[in-house]
Image (cartoon, one colour):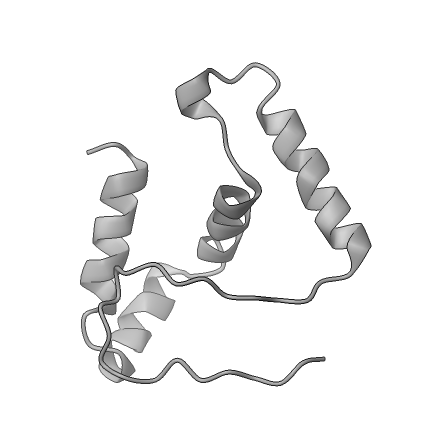
Length: 91
């Protein structure tokens, strides 16, 4: 495993940041295949990228309870999650 990186600080929780990660090739290939399958009948505006796909999978790991608990340590995370959900739902 690689070294851990800390993201502490009072930054804009809605800002996007590039993160470099190292994954086994089989995982990358599996993700690429799933993205390809998701895009088979997708219109140009509904197409997903590998980044979108991974983002959604990571977000699925957070429950409402997790966000509520995180709010104590990371003030503003609930609002950031709400904004993200609004954006992906096209509101």
